[in-house]
Figure 1 (cartoon, rainbow, N blue to C red):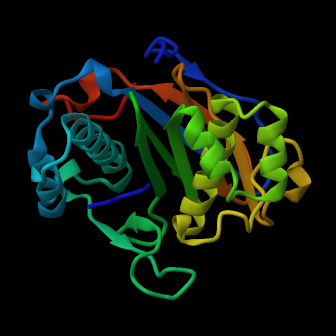
Figure 2: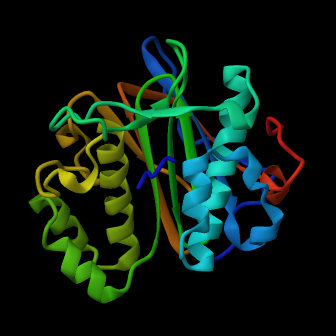
Length: 257
């Protein structure tokens, strides 16, 4: 099991490529998004999941939570499988050491040969977001929070982030964009929100103050949501595609066109 932490999106067949920065040493990132409100639980085939993932699906979760979880994990396996030369059910995962304590609960990774792709998975509201790259990365998508949540959580962020959100009138979309950037970075380094939320600056106004060795970008997504990707090194091309609902339905495993 991997646990990474409305309006209409662009048509599912469209690929959006934000500003690119080609050059030596830069990391290209592939991102895929899916709408969960186009599917039902019966559309999914849990046979491709491992025992721990199936146990999670059988837990007493809300239907919407089970749907997001199932869609995300089936899609991730189907995206990774052709890159590993195996079927979706044969994709195996492990946990990297925690960068904070060294314990076996760090960033999720493919349990495979050297050179296996790095990945990150996130889901919130109506959207699932998956990222794959040749270096460690993190992705995050969030539905816009309530105003009370913005006020409460902003107080624990980095001072410069707090100032940016306050300057935007504590608007939920401004908060969500910064929160996603922070979550993506924390997932990428493998420590998550166990790291103090005021320690690192992941805001939008001062790129020079971002954590050393990491590149962070916002990601276009569905209305009512924000998304971001963070990658170790300098980001090159970021290819963002919307997958059709059929990509995760039973009997349709395969690489998206």
